[in-house]
Amino acid sequence: EAQLVESGGGLVQPGGSLRLSCAASGFRFSTYSMNWVRQSPGKGLQWISYITGTSSIIYYADSVKGRFTISRDNAKNSLYLQMDSLRADDTAVYYCAKVGRFDGFDLWGQGTKVTVAS
Amino acid sequence: DIQMTQSPSTLSASVGDRVTITCRASQSISSWLAWYQQKPGKAPKFLIYKASTLESGVPSRFSGSGSGTEFTLTISSLQPDDFATYYCQQYTSYSSITFGQGTLLELK
Image 1 (cartoon, each protein chain N blue to C red):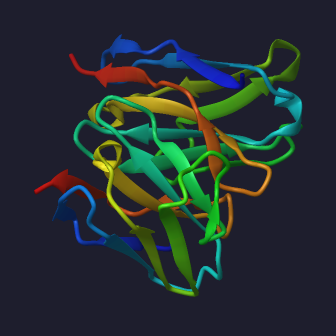
Image 2: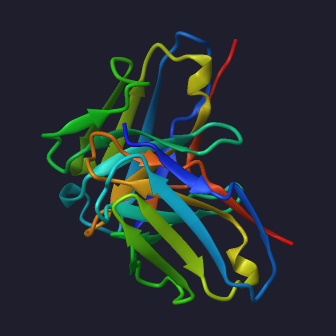
Image 3: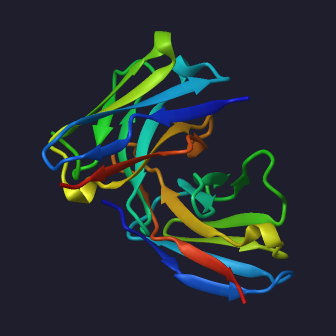
């Protein structure tokens, strides 16, 4: 069964850094593009970053550009999000999500919570 | 960025009702639209892609339609498991993906 499991969330002070991980299993990870999506408390879904299977194409939402870095290690079936210069408005549950064969996000992790507060 | 606007924000309905949620795009997105269902404390679940194609395993009471700027998600006969929040998503380009603000489908 295909599965994504995020980890690495926690409490961090404003200006701090955190690295999220997403472990993939049950599918050929290297052939699929991946994304990070976040959801602030009580709010809707916000796409924040995309990476192709070979890491040749990477995109970021304007709200995180220059502060967050997406990467992947296909040998480890893992996706990462390095988050620097964190702000209070980065507080959210962060999900990794797989792009489906026919587009859309067909598989999501359970999410990892990030709280930015002093 | 393409803005996605859902209506209504909240929909009250009963088991067995037929309900429709609308999603409007600020510019044409052809049929590059997906729908998701999310329950409290859970990850979104993928329902529909390319505006009208049902993901494998999704009950046939769910259907999607539309193209260009106006889209609908219809549930033909509400079941207890369907009460949740629904989001539309446009994916014309993976450089700028946007979601609607969500529609809460609640029990009347």
